[in-house]
Amino acid sequence: MSEPGEIEYCHSWNVRRNRVGVALSEDEARGRDAAGEQFIAALRPRGSRQPVLVTVSGQTDTISVTFRDQHGRQNLKYWFVKADDDERLFLRTVMLWEYPNDDPKLRQSEATKVEELSFRPDGYVQRIVMDHVERMKDTYEYDDVPVADNWEPVPEFGDYWSIARRERGARPVSEPAAQHTR
Image (cartoon, rainbow, N blue to C red; front, side, top):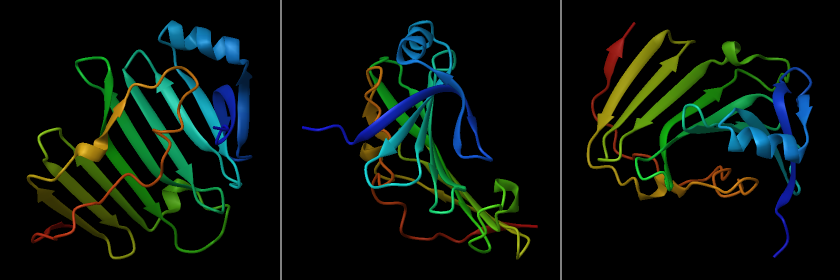
């Protein structure tokens, strides 16, 4: 089976230019991984113009995965946390950003809508939707949500394609009464 794309490693990512900021060789990144130090794996899927950024942080036992829209703006981010067994990751938080138009120069802070989903292994989900245009913040809570799609094996160094999947399963469908705050 062929590789799904290329991987570049770096210490930092240049958001403005949408490219590696401070590059790392594969050996340097592997050393950082072994030492539990943070690094970024920039995955470039075949056929996609936008990289998927996988930030590995051994000190906090987390991996975040950042997706960009066709204009290069961050529009989806996953935060995985290592489970107690050290063999699995759990997708704990998902953030989504919506922008008012197609302007590639818009910054994340200029998003018109931000949604945060927080998951627990017991199936509890909290969803917060902040609509900056309507100046509204809605909070939803769900119980007994299936979270089987939130589990991933801890990837070996360089094998990040599975956690870098944008589609991860269904979101909660039923909308309970929202709690509005202004």
